Image (cartoon, rainbow, N blue to C red; front, side, top):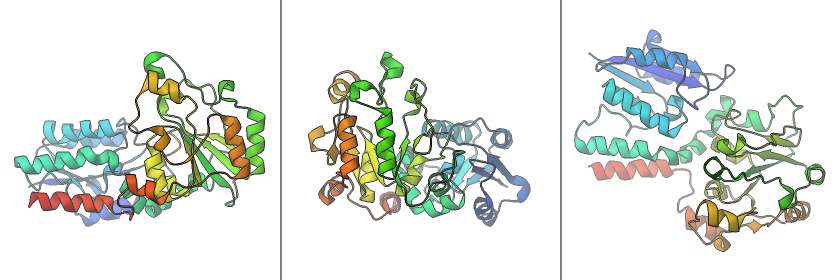
Length: 339
């Protein structure tokens, strides 16, 4: 007879795990078989997860309500999945994704389908849009942004939230550091704060975590807030709360344009990036959005409100379905193929 275990995780001590607990108990897991960590999902160095892992064996079934409760680090999720299913020989059931139930089919096709769905987890940001209100109840989304939980006074809802997410550079490989706030790109700290204040803007700067280690500027003020992966369980789950996105070559562009909100493109180092860092998938001139070559153009754009959403044609070019049901469609297709 199989022993059922349940694993729950929330990111902070203040967050509520009741939603997970209810679903796991409905699945038949007893209280003494439930394990809870109130800790970030950035890695698996968690006390109760380790205790749970020690108990798992070939007669165990581990239940989680969703894959992001197991963790947020894609490569480590894959690794832990293999440890549980191959080394421990236990089964895993992800309640909100029926295809991720290793009990269902042990043949080659079933394993292939399970592995395929697991490998597509990096695209499951689609489902986060469906669950955003539940995430808000846990205090992950709007509580951080609209309430600004950074030890500063609360900002009014009328503020415009302006997110800057430059893509990952190869500084950790080449030693060359990209600083978007360099004078080389005409950045003026005093002028920028003036623009933010005049236009009711709150600037959220989210560098890649590798670049954050080497950047000198990690500012946190009422209008210029540097954020990291430690501040959010999953930044993509709060894109709907952002009013303007600014990026250069990041794939966040494709996710954000489906919100039909303004996008500013800031390819400050386009020539250097394409020649020394990484190549682009598309001709950058064809990427839709207002473009600025330096901060002077950004300042002018913000003052004159010369920013706009991507066109409907551009959105459809990269996102055929924008009804929030892409994961559901994908699962249906895989199920049909299996039959």
